[in-house]
Amino acid sequence: MDWILTHGDTDGMCSGAIALSAHEGRKVFFSHPSGLAEDLRQVDGDVIICDIALSSVHLKGVMSELERIKSGGNRIVYIDHHPLPKNLKVEQFPGELVNSTMSCASELTYTYFKDVVPADMSRVAIYGAIGDYLDRTYVIEKLLTNWEKRSLYLESGILIQAIDSTGRDYESKRKIVDLLASNRTPSSDEEMVGRAIAEAIAEEEMRNRIKEVVKTVGRVAYVLDLQWSMGKGAVYARAYGNALIGVGAERRKGYIDMSLRTTSDQLNLNEIITTIAPRHNGSGGGHPKAAGARVPEGEFSAFLKDLDASAAEIERKRTVEY
Ligand SMILES: [Mn+2]
Image 1 (spheres, protein in one colour):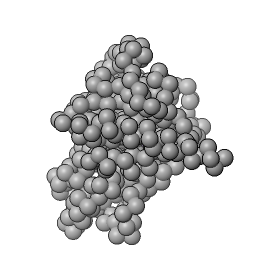
Image 2 (cartoon, protein in one colour):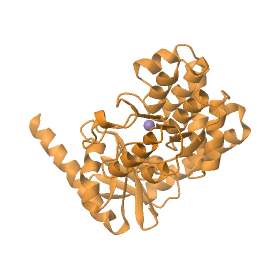
Image 3 (cartoon, helix red, strand yellow):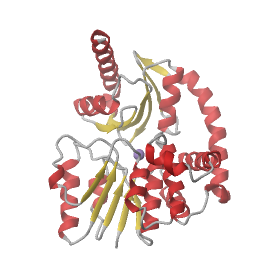
């Protein structure tokens, strides 16, 4: 069987939908950087992987699975926009590697498949770009010229809120990917519209609750176990904690999973996280302003202190430089 492995956020799901519209009938499976090696073990055919960072900590396991898939005579296309780990030898990559940190994965996936997917799939690339805050690139702005921008914002708003409401419900996520791949709009699906409105109402309540429960460690503001989108939790924690970095975290099987956000142009969360997470027996990474991490539960408070110290150090250096 042939596969599509993709990330479960809006950008990942839009990438997956574009790949699925290029390869109807493939099995869509959701994965993430620390689970990728394990998830690849079930792959027994061609595979397209979208929007999943190659993490330096898990690189060995991922590469050996990719080698196994390739040696079975199968084709691998790996499309991603996260920075490549320093220990990756690109020339030895066992498949096609499409990578740029300037665009979202949906844009890269659409560009890769544009000759084989219906032209209407360009709006799915735009939804994905909005989902990852990467809609102001040359390609996306050009694609937008053939659409009514304001209407696409409604569609992407419904899509993004509905996806946020799915959490780890992979069956619902798969239905959304199918809908997008078959060129239907989010607004045409009653269940999605219902989910989106309910999520928007929950967000308004949660936003106000975060004002009350946010905690700070120096320049870092965090919320823990809100049972809600960790990314949004991080955004509002930073805003209401009046901090440099926001963290939305939750306890999970002895670990703390978290999303991190900053609005500072001086910080690079990907660099900070890839440096400090391993010091706490954790892993993580992502983008300069949005990243994710996982550390053992007992390390969480030391990790936050380390995060604050790194931010302080960068702030101090930059101040001296200027
Ligand atoms: Mn992405």
